[in-house]
Structures are given as structure tokens and as C-alpha cells.
Image 1: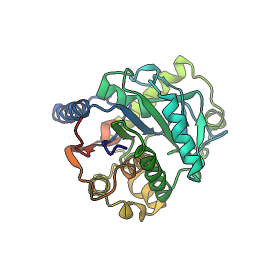
Image 2 (image 1 turned 30 degrees about the horizontal axis):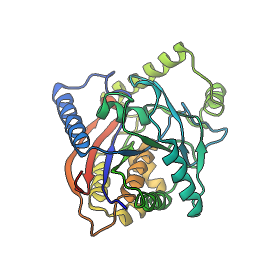
Image 3 (image 1 turned 120 degrees about the vertical axis):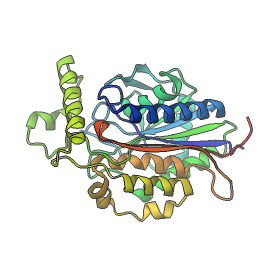
Image 4 (image 1 turned 45 degrees about the vertical axis):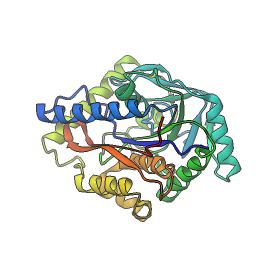
Length: 319
């Protein structure tokens, strides 16, 4: 019924308003975000499908789904992002989950999803907070092996989402929030501290002191990376640009041919978040539908532990 669809691939970083960067870098990023905001608001989406990861704030190793749709969601308000409920379209969320199940794509469903800056920051940057058009939130595991979804499965999920959107008479924005190259100090089950392993397995509300300590640890990691600390994984601007090129050009076969282990090796443990872009891009109308690309930008920012990229494309369908 509608091919009015837009794609936004947007990196996130909890250090954006915490670790200072050079004035030129900040100006470039602020200009890029302003361009994204203006383009998205001008396009005026009626529905948002927001695909994002979690950083052990809402999903834990006790039961870690590869994908999960929420028919209700609330932001925990970590770092400098807002806390509170997202404007979830519960009916659309359950309809999408039903469509995916009927299409032989088993999907987890959360009736009370908790999300963190991996979801909230994109909304904050574009809409200034959580008061947004209706949202369908879709979580993708990007930190807990072995259940990180493979590239081909991400593309298949996106294509199935696109077929669902083909039936809706609503202007839909697909946001992939995550990536690009980065390896922040997100703990894994290989961590030597049993207490840390327990915390990322069985979730509990952190104390204020624990939250402050986590923020300080991540901030220190950004400072160390910017100072050239050789114990930290460097950013990979060439990898990032190749990923963005393939997304922009619709060369999804090339992305799906990448080696899963190579993503971690070449771009960092958390570069798997970039797969949120792949899901969102695969849900866009297939060629020959032309896509306008009014906004694209990239900057490697070690202080923020981020290969920071933004890419906005749309079908150009009239409002």
C-alpha cells in the first residue's frame, strides 16, 4: 500500500557529551546531526521502526534473544540520555511480530522492554527526547556470543520487515542505531571477575555508585584511546567507509559475504552493532525504486570510542 520509506543509519556513543573533543570535530558532528534532524523532520515519518542493541541494561545472558520486538519499552536513562517510556505503537509491534512468525521467522516479544542509549540517543538527537512519532522497537543482540545474529539472517529479517511495511499506508522511517567500528569496555563472560560475570548474566538495577563508576571507566577508556593506548582496539575508518558505501549503494550481497570473525578482528567487538544498519537497509524498497541521499557524514572520534557515521536516504515519495 505504501513505499514511502526512509532509512537512517546513525552511530551512537555515550561519551558524546562527556569527553571533550577538538572544536573542529565537535562542529563537524553538530553540523552533521543538525542536517540529519532537519532531513528527518522534513520527511515527516508517521511510524518509526527503531533497531538497536543493548549494553547489559535490559537484556542479559540468563536469556539473550538474537532479536526481540517490544510492544512497550522504557529507557533506563544511562549516561546523558533521557529516561522514561518510548512512544511505542503496540498494535503495530504485535502485527509485525505476527507477520514474522507467519513468515517462519521466530521472534522474541517483550511486553516490558528496557532499552538504553542504544535506542534513546537516536531519538534524543532527532526529536530532542522521547516524544516522537509512534515507534516499533526491535532489539538486536550485538554483545553476547554465540547468539549475535549473522549477516545473512539480519538481511533476511530486514527484507521480511519490508514486506510487512509494504502493506501499511504509513510513511515509515527505519533507524539502524549502532556501530560503526569500536570496542568499548563492554564485559563478556570471559571476564575474570565472577561478580562482573554475574551482573551481565542476571540483571539488576545498578546503584548510583555503580553507574557512576561505569561512566568513569568508559570515559577513561576514550581518553586512553585518544592518547594512543596500544592495549585498546583502534578505530577502523577504512572499514567504516566501506560499510557505509555498501549500505548507500544497496550492495547487501557484499556485506553478507563478510567474515563474521573478521568483523571483530578488523572493526572491534562492538562493530556487530553495524548490523542494525543492514536490517534497516534491507527493509527499504528494492531496486528500481530510486533513493535520495541528502545526508551522509563520517568522523573517527577516539575520544568517544566511535567510528561515528550518519546516513539518511528516502524514497522521495511525497507527503
